[in-house]
Length: 606
Image 1 (cartoon, one colour):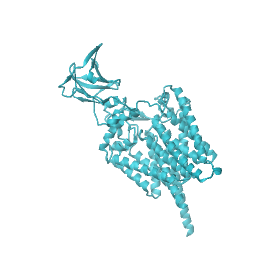
Image 2: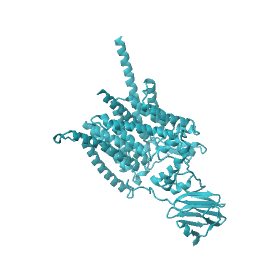
Image 3: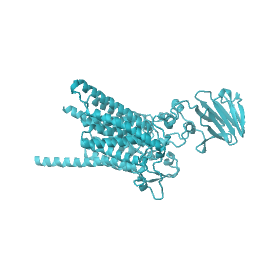
Image 4: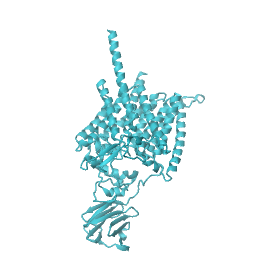
């Protein structure tokens, strides 16, 4: 009887081990292979479809970066999820319950969306449909299922290996040694010539295979934290050398990406980590007498990381400046972040244009055949009599009561200028003004805005304008959002005045903040659940870690994953969730939560 039980137990143990090997293989594929999936995909869009509305560019467009990533991500994450669900018991905890609630809002928002067909697959070159979002949650819960330290180490080293390969390739791109290993040349059709798949490099940005330096910087800010913590935690010299090299490669690319949010997030979490280590070191010194003081190994390694980081920072700055002498450094914003932009709004009332200023009274301009009239009110009962100066065929209008305003009028159109700001150009068609925008003529549409953000519309390379228009939309998405990947369908891209003020002349297809993205796509309630989940995880980690001696691998692992999570959510205030980086975030967070469980279990066993 005992023999039969032993055979049965061994069989169950073998099956469980076999299942876990498949699951960890699925996660390794997502970590290790997803960034290198660049297969060329033609996007055929019907002009009447939601796909075209979400991204109204040429009907036959192409995508290298997300379509097939989404396909393979869903295949492997759902394969692992299928095995975990049908071959094991699901352990309920505050984390699994929190994830269930969050993803319930994802499912409900997408199912009841007026764009339901679109939410299933996503679009607009993002392709984060409902199944991709569910896949993010499954990837975290798969890590809970693995639990063993051996599996967690495998996942960590897979992350560092991927980051190292991408970073090494990024440096080769910077050094122009890409002719023999140009990945994109192998995946594009012969009829399509790729002269430079990394167009940002000539502007002094380093992007590797991510195309966009912002997404690459977000990815590297997480990996820099992970690689630093792995280096500090390991004692074997071979692994120390490898993890240190990995950190140098990844950090060099983080500097090269010029992602301000990614870089500053990494700096902030590094300071927090240094405070925790320093606090623990002071406690250890206070317990020993002067003769027996011994500097902890992790302090020596931390100093080495700091010195190396300073050297790499200066070397990368010098190298990228040689590529482009006018490249902007982290300390020099690409555009003005704040300040009075002058124009508050421009509104149209039939054949009347209303110009609103932040600091001056509004002025109204009416067009009647070839005549132009100015007034301080919409009724035009009290006309203004500005001075007129003729310069060639152009008439310039000035008025002492409205000194900041300048108006120019000729047969080609009507221009308005506020101080030295870029002029707004209009064309009068049957007495109705049309705004010139990106080479075309468009009607003026007005939407609710956040006053402070609208005033600082150029903040964060135009993010002030994007957030100013996005946040008021949340009034309609308190409990349920509009569904996965629907942001480009919701954003008022027809507010051309706001775009002109922010010098953003393209089509906005991304939220440029994961928080507005979550609030609009899944609801404000969903955003609160997500932030609450992260807050509980971070609080628990810091509570566990605060008084430990950092002699265990899991101590470094727990704090490293927590800081990586903190780095991601800090950077995500400026970047939307994307398949380029989000899978790593959800997996690392899963590793961190699992490590917390192991630390609590070790504490109970003592």
